[in-house]
Image (cartoon, rainbow, N blue to C red):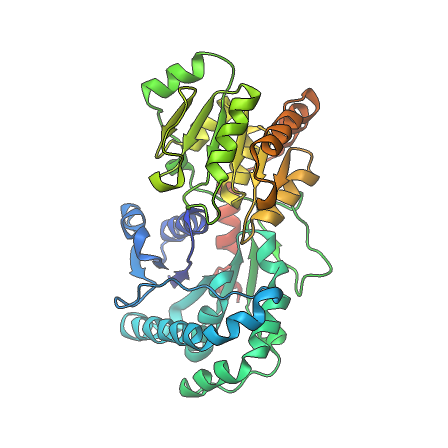
Length: 392
């Protein structure tokens, strides 16, 4: 029996695959601790998984290293504070493992967006370490990470010195040192590319089936039955960082004469008044809802992308930030959707994109893609087989 420590940060799309993997590791007889954003403590513990907060209690800000080349010079002034928070996290997690875990039996698995934290911990404690990439974007951006770390190598290496670690001069080589490198998507969505700095083990999509499947409220059932399949507008579990996402989408549906279901827990993100043709909910089980829709307008999160693929419905992705534009590009290349950047979030342009998706050809292509084999249980099992310590 091994002791697995899993680290992730971000939204539900980043969390739920780690919950699935944690559950499977537990079922195999291993000890499991999931370290994540404090907002997810109740969700994680609901599954009987040991939870530890990613942040120390005094921290309010969430981590996030900006590595855009255009903003690199602007963000350098913040990097010292950012790195300080990262290394606070390293010290906290190392202390937790020291106090409660047998190092010889511990395996560390981290989300790519915490690579500097989890790889540093693995170095200090000499633990076997694996990195998980929820979508292709996260491996595509590694060279830029290497560049950003190189620019601020003096700052990072000062903290590494305090942790009794040697300085790093080649950050790309450092990023390659993980024992396991796993991509949570099928090869037909994105195969290993020559531009990537290493190959990944591609296991397929993973999401929380139990959380996303369930009975829908009676009024939703009545709304679905009372006319043509509506359009779903959602930003997943996250709040839009750019204004106009919901207002432009709702107005576009009004222009095209489509009924709408809006799902968002964030009141302030929505227009103050919604038309009668719009039904709004804070949560609905997407696995049950999506197959009954005509189209979905969403932010491009990988979890929403793969559920829409499986449901076989056209996707209009209004993408801003993180992996969303790349996910949208791949959906467009598959012929099952469109992707609009923020400067195109105008009702007329969103309406035009919706009309382009309302064709027999797009719907048939969506149906074809939905028939491709997807098995979450097998994907989770594949991850657990890859990170099995007996394979080291």
